[in-house]
Length: 126
Image 1 (cartoon, rainbow, N blue to C red):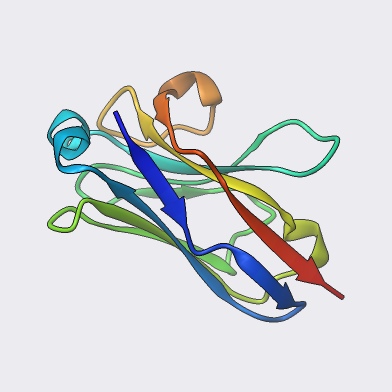
Image 2 (image 1 turned 90 degrees about the vertical axis):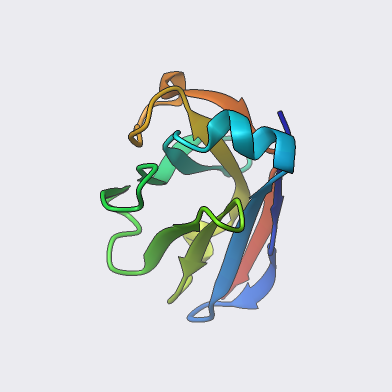
């Protein structure tokens, strides 16, 4: 299973980035009915939940710290999940990981995910 995260970079506080997580064609067939999620890990901290979406893109979940600023979406025709990040803060700086859930819905726990992408770095300067 291959999940490729991209879109990270360096921005100033208040800026925006859009992360993408693309599944290979073979992976897409495996996870097409799975929920998807984004997690992040800052230096010296544990990985934490950011956002999740169910397989039909109807229901979403967000960490309190990103509500109103981040938006998760997915395009199943393109086998891609997105994380639009607006009003970025220095505390959002981390490596962001996408993951495919074990079920059709999203999950806030890492235990709910079975496949992980390699991570993409997001740097936010004040």
